[in-house]
Amino acid sequence: MSDTFEIRNLQAKVEDKPILKGLNLTIRKGEVHAIMGPNGSGKSTLANTILGHPKYTVTGGDILLKGESILDMETDERARRGLFLAFQYPCEVPGVRMSNFLRMACSARVGREIEVMEFFEKLEAKMKRLEMDEKWVKRYLNEGFSGGEKKRNEILQMMMLEPEFAVMDETDSGLDIDALKIVSHGVNELRGPNLGILIITHYERILRYIQPDVIHILVDGRIVKSGDADLAKHLEEHGYDWITKEVAA
Image (cartoon, rainbow, N blue to C red):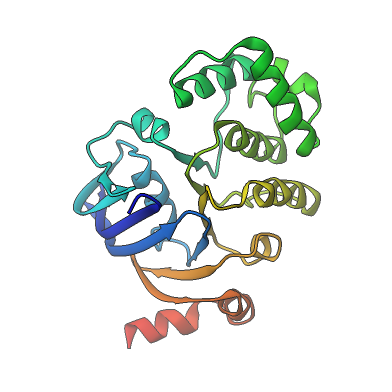
């Protein structure tokens, strides 16, 4: 139980509209899972519900981090416990420098104030891996960044915070092939026995670079099928019509 992230019969709504309708999923550290599904299936709702976005109301089921329910925890507490969300559309925060934000976030994660030299040594090493110019840390958080730069910054945050479980909500959205390769390389460097990863995506292309252990198909708020990498290739070739028809039948 100490190495698992578990979603049990999760049901959630937005305003009065039910979106998640009994979703079950278990991820162990060291595993990479991917969730694919058509538009409106509940992918982004799942990501936001995991991190406790107030817009999404859980109406049933549970989310367990290392055997402990997180539903009553605020978003920052979930993050301190080892959860990380890479957003589909990272927001800009004018007036907050990247370096200050990252140092505060890393200090909160480890429960102590990190010394300046210790922080910048680690930051410099991680930025080199992502081919990021050191001038980035002087910029305001995501302000004026391109889509690819914002996504690369998300992976930098994940590398610095060293979460136990990471949820990547359509990280490949808006990336050109070069940016996708760099972001995927960063994720693959993080991959290992101390991290469980959930990739939420609409397309198969990111899974060419980050090979998942299991792929799940989400339709109408439920996981309806799971399989290996061949399942993603089948979706790329045939779309989602076959699975939605199969579920309807």
